[in-house]
Amino acid sequence: MKKVLHLFLVCSLLAAMGFMPQSDEAALLKKAGKIHDRVISVDTHTDTALEMIKPGKSHQEIQACPENLKAGRVDCCFYPIFVGQRALTDENRAKSYDYAIARMKGIRDYIAQNPSEMEVAYSVADIERCKKEGKLSFIMGLENGFPIGTDIGKLKDFYDLGTRIITLCHNYHNDICDSSQDSVTAYHGLSAYGKEVVKEMNRLGILVDISHASTETLIDCIQYSKAPVIASHSCVYSLKDIPRNLKDAEIYAIAANGGVIQVTSGRWALSRLPHPQVNISVFCDHVDYIKNLVGPQYVGIGTDFDGGGGMAQLEDASKMKYITVELLRRGWTEKELRMFWGGNILRVMRQVEKVAAEMNASK
Ligand SMILES: [Zn+2]
Image 1 (cartoon, helix red, strand yellow):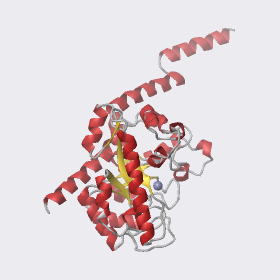
Image 2 (tube, helix red, strand yellow; image 1 turned 90 degrees about the vertical axis):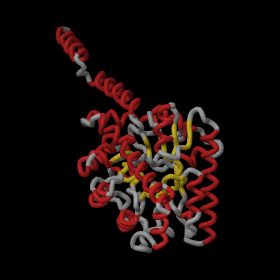
Image 3 (cartoon, helix red, strand yellow; image 1 turned 30 degrees about the vertical axis):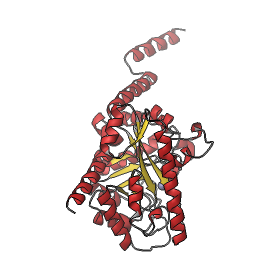
Image 4 (cartoon, helix red, strand yellow; image 1 turned 180 degrees about the vertical axis):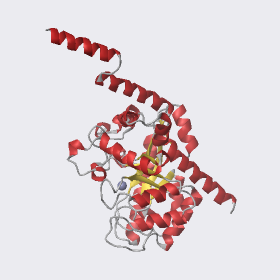
């Protein structure tokens, strides 16, 4: 009995001093919430748009639905339209164009139904204003440039619908470039047409995204793009050696060019550990790896929710603030967290806007 009383007194004392694990966790969560009040948080890759416009689909089944984004304290989410790669025929190009345009209009219509809650953002200024107004903002985009086909004029059609990012390819080469997972090397990087596409993306003000692209494509993009390029959802090859992840030299190259690597959250990219063991800590190992290699100004997050993203402790977007808790535990400062959550990607987007303005002014 005396022992129990002693333990009780020690626990009470530790709790009062803030050393109890539970109260420690609660304090970190509170601190994380306050940081999210002050910083803009951006998720640069989800496959959620397609899920949101599926008839009869409940939002409870959708990882990055607006309700979960709000609960997780995400301010801006990229809602690109994913397009699977098909054989390079004119018929398939036309079909994929019609498919992507129809779906982009569909998700825009959904967002337009709730103007007091959410908006499509066209610029960094829009994202910042929406944060101030307490609204969610969404960036339109394409995951795979296949729908542009061989007609560069189609880029403007997507730009006019709000597209501000294009992941150049998916798992196979298209008309623009080679992919990291393809057994075929079609161009050793960007095709001649792909170089023109990158130039036109620069002129319009569309982010060049090299996730899924081959190393040679990445090198070409850095050479030919007038604005920094990003990896919207990729992880570290040294921590999981799949072709889709980024080797140290690629991370250095993106950082040296002023871009950013947005770490993704799917087990497929993070680790070979059993599912239950792949958690926020494993995700943060990738984030810390990039921070230690090139600095906190070159790392962010692109979850890939609704497209294979998510893991233990981060089952959906409502849990995003727990990443902040883990990074605080690892000693990240608020300044660094501001960069991670949005400062870095917004810096790159501002640079993309600047390059577009300069190219159009000098025409
Ligand atoms: Zn992807």
